[in-house]
Length: 151
Image 1: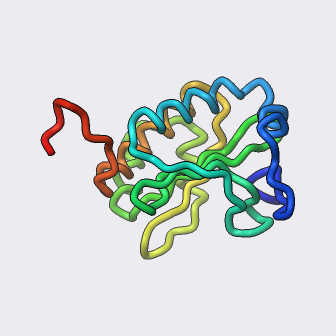
Image 2: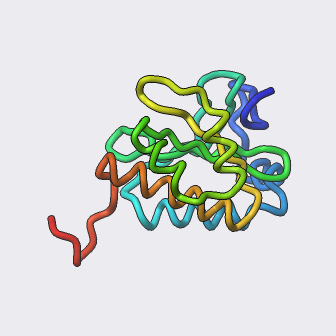
């Protein structure tokens, strides 16, 4: 089974197709996308990721490094967050919800960390992804500079 619903490499889905697939969870997609765009200096693109097991995703990168990807699924979406082993240890103590905890537990551990695929089904899931992105961004120094931030 694939991570996303759009697995035909030769057909980049249109915005209307993406919205139709996500369905009633579109406000969560929009909220999380707005948070990412407003918090991090991201470049975004819609890209076919890693083959048919993953499919098309909205990808956000900071200075060429992946911050997160959103994979449309039938009736929602899945957020990908890659964490280092140290960040995984921290995430396990953050009191995250069931979907985030399950994603951590099910992710294959690699020496460089884990790829988490978190189904975003509730506002709480959205908040968990935001917390994990903040954790990743802090480790990689990916935050936007603000007027009050030191240069």
